[in-house]
Length: 177
Image (cartoon, rainbow, N blue to C red):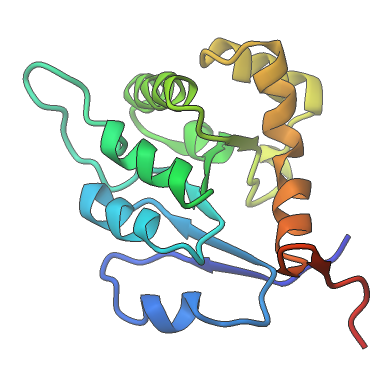
């Protein structure tokens, strides 16, 4: 399956609105950029996926872990039907794997509690980062997902692409000429 994807990654939000408002793209992915960047992303209804919300968080506070999500952001994601994506490549290439895994585990707990859809994938940048379905599914269980949630984390992309084919409620784009 071939699809048009726009992935926005950047420190500042220059050009964010123009990039997200492109109508020809079927899939709009924004990479996490701290609490303020994540909040701005989750408030935009045109975004489909927030990838790695734990990115951009430098330090944890004294009494709790800063994971890039909180209860308010999870409610925004649920209201705007935005999927939280977890990248195995980010875990694999991180310097402090234990901190990244702990932040992701906290995000999984929050997403379970507030019923936000989670997507899990390898997001490999080279052939050495690729992993099989069973390996990724087992790792998703380690992160705190149950069997059903782990299976759904790999199928959520199809739901997003089918949702983006709808022009209006009940009217679906079948084939583009």
